[in-house]
Length: 112
View: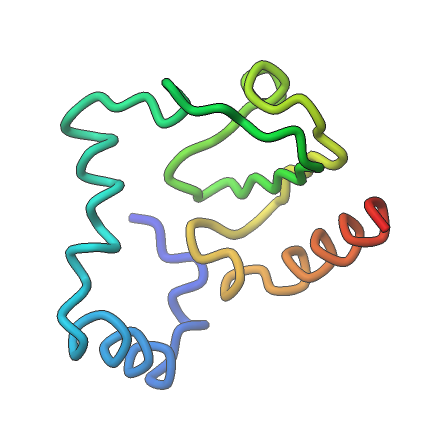
């Protein structure tokens, strides 16, 4: 079973998530997109016009969904940055903070 990054969560993050989702009774809203995507075979890009804004894509090995370069180019017309990292997952901002900050910084510099 995957455990990378679990030690990074800590009690503060767990309490913050409880306060945000459970106490406000909106956890189901945050899960809806996963349910629709998995159980209803939803194509997230169907009938959606993708704006021609600059795009940066960061992939992490333990992410739930991966967007390949091929699929990215077919979906987005203005990719400025595409990175694949060695560690991290769905909570990359916690698992691999340095990579996320580096990607954001690099992307902002490219589009400014």
